[in-house]
Amino acid sequence: MNAEQPVELSELQLDALTELVNLGVSRAATSLALMVHDEVVLSVPKVALLSREEAIRTLGRREANNLVGVHQIFEGDITGRALLIFPEEQSLDLVRSVVGGSLSLEELIELEQEALAETGNVILNSCLATIANSLESSLRISLPEVLRGECSRFFTLNPPPEPGSTVMFMAINFEVRKKNIDGYIAMLMDMPSLSALKVLLDAMIRRTAGL
Figure 1: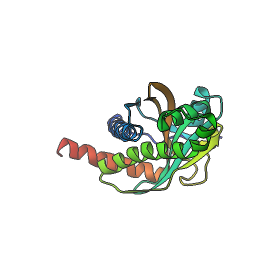
Figure 2 (figure 1 turned 30 degrees about the vertical axis):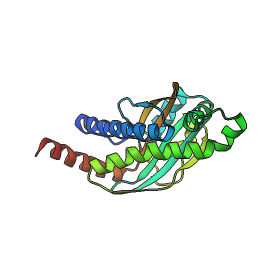
Figure 3 (figure 1 turned 120 degrees about the vertical axis):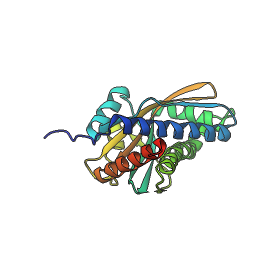
Figure 4 (figure 1 turned 180 degrees about the vertical axis):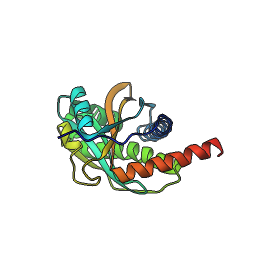
């Protein structure tokens, strides 16, 4: 059986989408900085569009150990699932950076779920809201949920989206309170949503060009 193939965007469409994601991440950094009362730097490289199989292989090559992530469902003109994923060993570093102070390990573990959910909510909502606003679209976004496991688990959750979806995948780097934390943002969308996204991107490109 052949591996599923992702929907392709033109170079112009992918550049426009990358710009939107970077703008969303920049806004997320500002929101996180207000939350932690310290400077936050979030860097995101170019967006890659992968099949689910490719996304699992890509993440598996980068991270062999267990992962922790936050996921949210978004619905509207485009429907899918957004994920923020970290190596499990870095999750407590992130929590310590977010909550600050000199908390004990037991206190950090107690706060971990809530702090991870809030961090994921800030970052994923900023990205999704920026994309939706720029595309003059609307999205309903579910409450964040934290999950743990191997990389395949994050890409085989129950729909939405349906099997055969394409993954928008990007590696990110956090710098919070002088700590460097690596993570990943992934957005899973099915074929109809990818087709709708292409139409919305083309309309935005035309508006930007004044056409």
